[in-house]
Image (tube, rainbow, N blue to C red; front, side):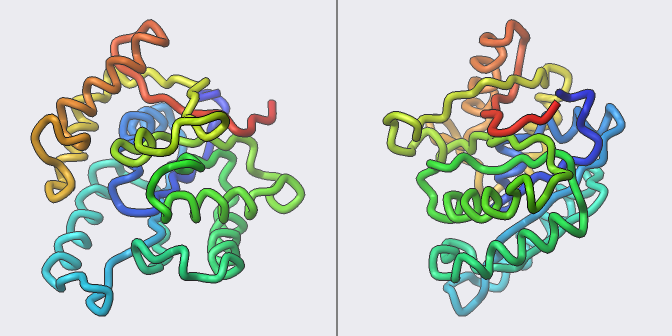
Length: 226
């Protein structure tokens, strides 16, 4: 699959989701000649209780992360973080669909549909609706990623479980992934906090063991057109 990805769009409900779930894969695709793009769906606003210094710090983090990965482009939708379930679904679908048709990516990386964070679930539904085959025939692959502290806390029953069937070897990229994630210093705490560098490395180790490599990122393939 990696060899067929020419233009990938990583969709992050919040800045940091892309790095937690796909930080190694982004680097690997970039190194192998693929174009990589970043869609950031939400941002904080003062009237929603976010302090201006925190908003400014997040903007600076986005700049640094963009430079670290070397994204070919960023799309910021500017929707209100933690409040996506208050928007009309058609509004979000319209914004996502507009970007898809503008960019025409062949591969989408999206959050898991049963993550505990409502923003993740809303974005999954909006992207899934926007990327129907007859609407976006250029989208050949759709993979959902796991977000530490969101995916594993979803209700573990039936089809709601994150059951990966695609593993990407990130052995050469793990340390750099951890460095980039550390840019989001306000999201990282010491072990046993889920978003600790130790836990992120341990998860990559476990996923790697399934694929018989040192470290890997895991995904659920939801669509693949050969």
